[in-house]
Length: 186
Image 1 (cartoon, one colour):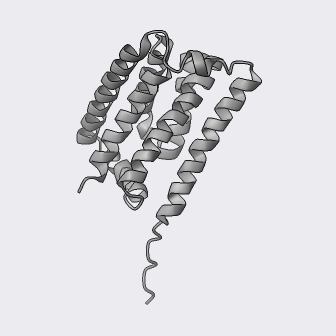
Image 2 (cartoon, helix red, strand yellow):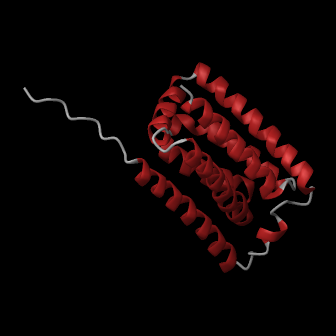
Image 3 (cartoon, helix red, strand yellow):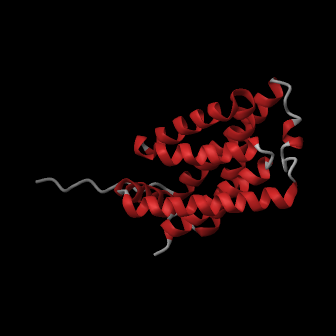
């Protein structure tokens, strides 16, 4: 009788580097795409958005908190969310709290510049929602589609209505931070 193979546990440093590389690639691709389309000035004009710092921050905070509440409700009623949490815990727990926090911030900036600035500028809100949903569900699974579409729509509408990257990045970072904190808490 052979012993079962031990489960492979990813090296935290390799996981951290892989995720950081993915986010830097996403940010670089967004900037390159904007530059090639002669739309790089959007980084400056849409960083805060026409509604200003206070409104963008407040809207981002509100959307991030509401999104977290929806996630927690989904967790209560849908078993697949707990499965996703287990995968996330396996990836992020070995990395540590401070590194996870940095990844949340870097990830929020990279995702928002890519999806809400570059993709949304080229394809509109519907196009950015579709691309975000496709990318997200390809890594987490199709059961995640309703939450992904709702999340991407909320962030796309924040951008569309003038809350800029500050609003969308704030919402993304708050949602990810609070959800990860809940997932990683003992």
